[in-house]
Each structure stands twice: as structure tokens, then as C-alpha cells.
Image (cartoon, rainbow, N blue to C red; front, top):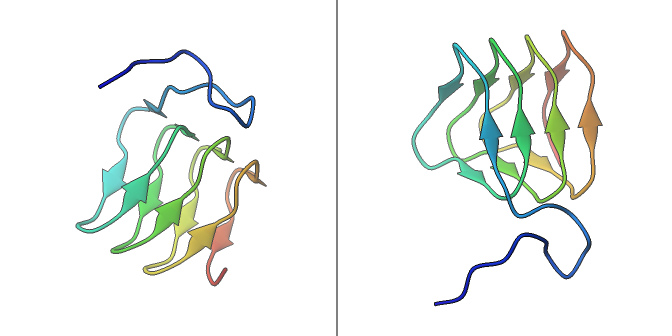
Length: 79
């Protein structure tokens, strides 16, 4: 096993999760930032470098592409 501070894509390797965040079963978060009061639905995929701002709902099964910014207050679904 190796550890790194930065991915080959240039995104940071950290995952940050804010306060009062709900992450349902099967969701997969990879090197992303999830801000406060956010809901991540079942089997949603948040890919590297994405930023999900506060008070966002990510629908079950949604796929958030690498480097995506989801602004505060949005409902995000699909892929």
C-alpha cells in the first residue's frame, strides 16, 4: 500500500466531509469535498476533485463527474 498527497490528475487525495452530512449506504466518495448539511443518496458516486457545497441533495444513483462544482442549495441527479 502507498500513500500520496496528490493524485495523478492533480486533485488532492483527501476527502473532506462537513457537519450534519448524511451519506446513504453504497455511496462512493473519492477525493472530494462535501460541505455542511448535505445529503448523498444511496449508490451515488462523487468522483475525485468534486466539490459539493452546503445544503445540496445528491439523488440516489447520481454520478458526479471529476472536478464538478455543485452550488449550494441544488438538487443533483443523473450523470
